Image 1 (cartoon, rainbow, N blue to C red):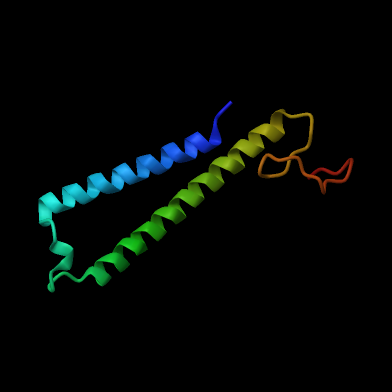
Image 2: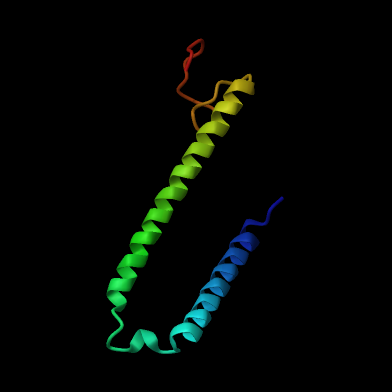
Length: 99
C-alpha cells in the first residue's frame, strides 16, 4: 500500500528541486540578479507565465476528464454493478433504470 504522506513529501521535494534547477539555469543564462534590473518587466513576464500555466491546467483537466470518462465507460461495459459516468457507483440510479 502506498504511504500517502511519504508520497506527498517526495512530490514536494521533487517540486523544490525542479524550481532550484530552473532558477540555476536562468541565472546561468541571464545573470544571477536579472530579475532585479530596471529593464526587466517582471510583472509582464509573470502575467504571461500565469496565462501559460492556466492553459496547461485547462489542457490537463480536459485530458483527465476524457480519460476518466473513457475509463468509466469501460467499467460500465464490464461491470455487473451500474456505474455513473465517472466510474463510481451511481447511488441515485433507480433499480431497473438504464442510466
